[in-house]
Length: 184
Image (cartoon, rainbow, N blue to C red):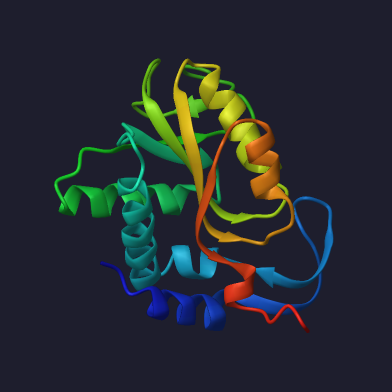
């Protein structure tokens, strides 16, 4: 069992920034969650791997692989599969490229995932869900079956509804309400 409160404290102190920001979705925001400050920290990576693995184990079917859109999902994927190995849980990782690889095998999806594999898309922060939907499209194009999306934080700005409209479920370790009082 992972220390949820310690992970929340790490995110609060290392990742949450206040000011005027433009998000990847194009939206303006008064706060920004730079989760790389925690996903690329050894203790943060361990906690994230443990937390997401707990959510994975709640699924009806244990997936064969986890992964997501490069570059944000890369350290999350590594953390989850490493923690899985320490717990003797067979789990592969994969990355989804934003652009087609122009040499070698010329693939969008890299790693030992194949047609018929059940997979989970991991994400650091979900706002609109568009990044994960792009990853889902590319993973499904190789014949893998996406079971759900798991994020570190759901900003509660429509991502879960976007996934539900497409037939996917979103789970997250936290929502923005865990960090910011909605009355502010």
